[in-house]
Every structure is written in C-alpha cells, then in structure tokens.
Length: 253
Figure 1 (cartoon, rainbow, N blue to C red):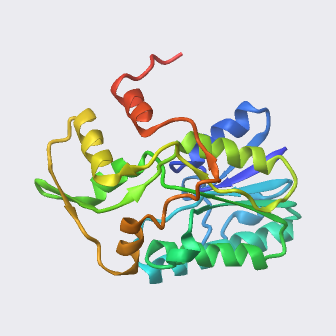
Figure 2: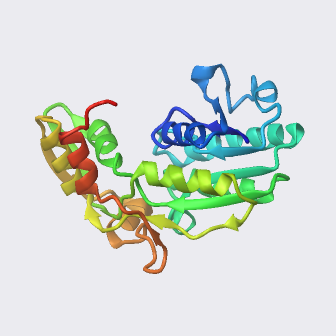
C-alpha cells in the first residue's frame, strides 16, 4: 500500500513513517520539510497520486483556541479535499481523549478537526489517545522562564508515541471503522512528577514550579477529565520505562 502521513516528521509521525516502511508499505511524508503545505494545499495533488490511505498526525504548538481552530479546520479541510480528488479510500485521524468534553484551548481545534473528518467525503477511522510520554519534554521546553519552569497541575495517563503509531498503522491498512476505542497509557501520572523526572534524567537544571491553569482547560487538566475511561485500550510501556530508555539508550544496530 501507498500510505501518506500528514505530519510525518513529528513526535508520532516519525514513528508512523518508520513503521509503514518496516511493514513493506510505501510511505509518503506530507510536511513542510518535503515541500508541502497542508494549509494552502500546495503540492498535495501530486503527493497524493496513487495513495491508498492517509494517516493524519499533523500538529500545531499553539494553546490558543482561535489559532488551533483556524489551523486544524483549514488544514483538515484542505487535506480531505485533496484526498477526495485523488481517490484516497481511507483517512485515519489521531485525536485526543475527551477532546470534545473540554473543547477549549488547543482542544477546541481538535474538536473542529474531528467534525470536519466526520462530515468529509473520504471514509474515515478516528483514534483518540492520551498525552504522550514526550509531553514531559514539551512542557519543560514551553514552561521555562529563565531559572524557573512553570508546570500546570495535571493528571494524565501518558502513552508511548510508538504504540500510538503502531495502532494507527494497523488501522490504516484495514477498512474504515469510524470511531475506534480510545488508547491510553498503563498508569496515571502527575505531570509535575513527569517533568521533574525528565529534567533529572536529562540533567536540566531548573526550578520546577507547579501552578493552576485558569479556565475550563485548567479545570479539565486537574479533575481527571483527560484520563481515559476504565474500559479503553491500554499501551504497555510506562513513563518510567520510556524514561529509562533515555537514561540508558541502547547502542545503535
């Protein structure tokens, strides 16, 4: 199969691209680095020629609801139009557990993305996952203010990006299934503990300060709204195991 990966160089996308290739399929990376623009659609028509399925793991770093909604709404609609014109038979989207319940900040854009996919002409499958283990590194980078790092109070159940990628590829090579069961990590964590442990392992010297993010988004982060339901699917690798891989990387080859 020829499978295109929107956002194929990102946190999940690079794993998806690798797994598609390892399974003997032909990956096509849709990203700015490959000369494509998912917002304007430049280059999409030729890139999607002969593509059987698309896995959309494109992302944006904004926390603004307005910016997130504009990005995901435009990029998803542009991608779906190009897919329909190219005869793509299956669109697989990655979203976030309980995005529609929160529908604020970054999550507002993911809700628009989901709705756009459901209204689109291309048969679809949608997987919602929890935050990834890499969320600790991203929070450390975004929250740094000189010698301080600000971390919002948050309950999370992180999952390995590689395991999310594996599930997405499994879905992409099968028939469209609509909304599939959510995927979460094996255990609940506190974000502040994750960031502290990541900073320790990477020898990042900073004072980590926890704070309560205001508004609906902050409430959802604190009260467990972003945790998966008890009966949803679980990944195998814990955050501690992922962190151990960073502290003790395996030799190449």
